[in-house]
Image 1 (cartoon, one colour):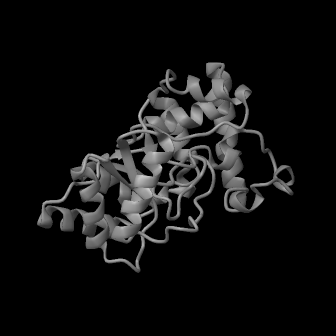
Image 2 (image 1 turned 60 degrees about the vertical axis):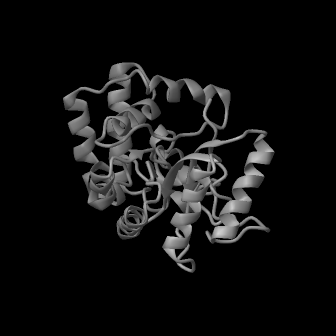
Length: 249
């Protein structure tokens, strides 16, 4: 299995948990010294010689982007990292990273990890997606199930009240959001699968998406995630979901 890590500065601890600036007490930002030290410590903790994909997980506006890009390139040249990924960067900053890398002959990023799902489409569809396509970046969306909202377990605002992720769900607990869940449930029933399976299948079939990221809290939740790999939605189902989720595009 590939070893996939993200820098300790601003890292997310679980794939489907809200991005947070969980700053390592020893490593702050994306300066060259921090990147080098954090990568080597990660390698020691894992007991491995190299990391397949290493993410710059949050932009660090306090550090010149050239310094960050050069530090990541050095990890590749040293054989400590095989490939570079970016997450939570604006299209403008990604374009700047590529411009610097091409000008200086540095390693180019190969992956992008954006926030993307049926009820959060704008980031990717208004800029990141086309950029990923033009730069041939593999896209691995996080929050693929919108903090559990797209699993179909919430049917009203009252269902969300008091839950751990209430704050994260506030923007989707709307009539438009529940309209998406209703269609997900209908299509899921037709295919004899769970709504989460359909939500992930829709995302997997979107342009530029290589694979969605989702997490399970219990073993019982795994089948719905795994079945999404083999479920291929037809054009009608894809169009229905794309249309009902248009308010979030």
